[in-house]
Image (cartoon, rainbow, N blue to C red; front, side):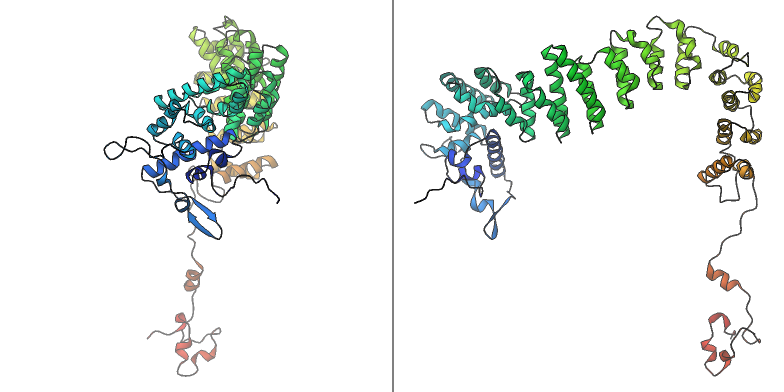
Amino acid sequence: MTMYGLGPTKLYAPAERLLHGKGVESAIGAGEAEDWIRLDSRVHWATCSVFRGWESTSWIRVGFRSVSTREIADWRQAPYWQERLGGTGSPSWSLPPTESEIALCLCHVDPRVRAAALALDESAELPASVLPLVLIRSADTDERVRTLARAILDRVLGDADKALPRQLVSLAVLVGTRRRYGTWAREAVLGRLGALPDEVLTHLLTNDRESRLAGLEAATMYGLSAMEQVWALAEQDRDEGVRAVGVRTAIRLALASGQQMVLDDTRARFFAHLDNDSAYGLRLTTFATAVETGFLHVDDLATLAAGHRYRKIRRHACAAVLAHPEGDVVLDRLLSARDTFVRSAAVERLRHAGRGDELPRYLTDLSGGVRATACRELRAEGYDLRAHYQALCADPATVVPTAVLGLAEQGHPADAALLHPFLRHPHAGVRARALSALRMLDVLPDDALPPFADDPDPGVRGTALSALRGTPCLLRELLDSSREDVRARVKVLLERNRIYRQSVCRCCPSPPPAPRRSQWANLLAEPRPEPWQPSMTRPASYDAGPGARESLPLWLRPKR
């Protein structure tokens, strides 16, 4: 007779097999760590739904018909606590309790049932097959259950060799992720092994999400040999949360190693993560972790602030540099950054760094925000900004375009006399800034702008047309300009303001357009001859016969 070694059936879940009276070995099979966690969760919620009055809605396919799980696994028959008034004040199990009943009670929602199952150890009735469930109970939220389970584990692990902790190490790592009480289980098992075996870590890092997270947390205590596996998850995992934990774990491992080569390699891979990770929010989160742990040096932060392609990372790095004790050392790199926010923050830091005498140099910065920051810092020292800008604009041969704007930003209309000659300056940038400055001071009317739309420089023409965008009547006059780019720009501005197709504007009123009538209104409004009058267009057959009048259209029938 041929014997076949068949595995456990997949028709019922392990919790339902226990409910049918099967033994733990028959119900769980090989029993991976994740299987014990799922068993505990399944029995907990099943007993909770029964004893709190909830109805199960899960269905299992059996043969060719679907039946409710209550018909094949009735959880009302599971052990429960019997009150003293009508019961015995103990669980409703057999005497002595069976192995399946003890396993169910260890996962029960009622802490009294769980404690009663653990108390069986005093009479040596607790089977060794439920030891993984006792390990889970060592992180229980109920204090009595937790104390009993830990006492049992201390006794069993103290008398056993290293084979037993090696069997429980995966489950101990998973239980160790429970926030409040899970650390004890992990330390109790790993403390007797001394280290986490390589095969266990590989199994955890290649399993489901919860196992991967638990494996990453354990890898922090495991050492550098797990670095490549950690980076593989940090760079390739599909789950954003796992990638975030992976990057944090890699940073902690590198810092704990203290080896410069490992730190440099991890820093390079972290910079690649900031550039290539698909989740933008994840990059910001991991960057904050790197700053908080001191993983990035001030030079690294200055490099990110000055040249990273993502704006928020540049600005977070700038804030980290300015908060760093050695931030003043790399201040020059921030002052030359392309991000105006970074430059402005660096200019604001000059006085704190004892370099306030450099502030006037940034009064002619290309960014208005940087100029405003420099003005604010100098004004706090009593510096005469208007006189400074007037001195910069006194010589047309040496004037710079941003000095013209800076003078207008002081808000004194009396400076218009100094700015008007710059409208004819040979430098196109000065002419364009002078046009904007005079408009800023409100001393250049709208009707004076069209001649500047014919300037040889496209920047001056664009400035003039942008200033005219609110005056469509003046823009329409430029539709006949000799420059093609001006005509195209005018059409865009008129279309953008929804004025190009209209004949009315607020600045140059014109007669309103004739009202549009529908096709039938136009047809009825046309003059037509009376039906009794001779018509060259009306067929003679309309008057033929007694019913000819009814055959005529309504508008051709004579009045009665």
